[in-house]
Length: 154
Image 1 (cartoon, rainbow, N blue to C red):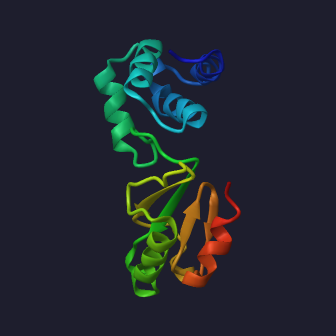
Image 2 (image 1 turned 45 degrees about the horizontal axis):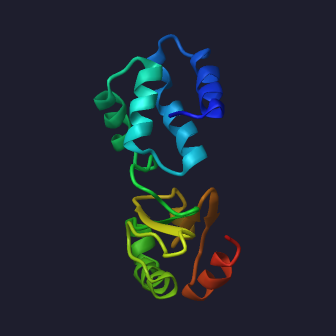
């Protein structure tokens, strides 16, 4: 069941679109912002509110790689694995993250603090290698930088 806050925020978005379906991505983002991920129940609730089928909402949710259909940690680490980052040290960063966090891609730390995901490009190839944690971009990274960066996120 959508919360009153979620319903209010989605209703606000509906005032800005010509048809309810056009608010689907925003509705998914709103629910994810509140819950960290989109459950099957959330898909059904959004579908009902937007007068869509659950299959339609799920197809939108699964198309976008930053809409999460399974539980994730409080902080999402997106490690760039583009060719620029790969050439500039991506493999060593990935290995160091694995050593520190004890997780691989698609996994969440036992304390639910971090989820590690690959990302095709973060758009900062001239400062590779790079990663993002939530909305924070880190560029020109070295493996030694990672522990200090991760300490910022509780």
